[in-house]
Image (cartoon, rainbow, N blue to C red; front, side):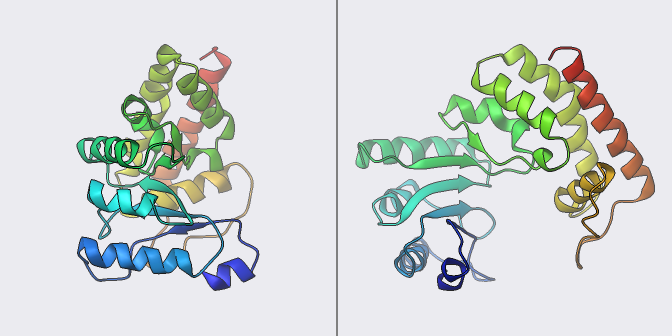
Length: 216
């Protein structure tokens, strides 16, 4: 955290602790010490071996420097209870929530239902116009346009992503290269998508832009 601050970072996304599966008391201690080490705002990333109870997130929300919570788990029952607990126990606190699932657009409607509209978009890296069209539709309540983009682009993209381990990263990087930016290959232990999958990705990108031109 200190090195990132010294290097000029504007904020920190705190990933799960390495290797160990800790209890709630240990997780709370870990992230409190993390936040205390820097003056930068910190967002906690729930995923893998860092899964929090609503009570722990309440304490995180009360911790100076911790401004938000990004969910990469996808348990909507848990995230609803977390949002409710923080709203009840820390009233008036502007605590941010993010949908951090891979291809977050696919679950955008569900997360909007529990009051979470912020998310990170991998698609923005290689098809920004598609990502922005979806974001606008989601935030203006144009569910018809949202569903057309899900049916015509995002669901097929997720189906393709499921064809290979690590494709949440390597398929995105392949998409960036398809748009003309040489970003190199993924680092080991990830591997590149095969030729057929790259062709399917190119077709999907073309279809996504076609949906926008049709007025989605």
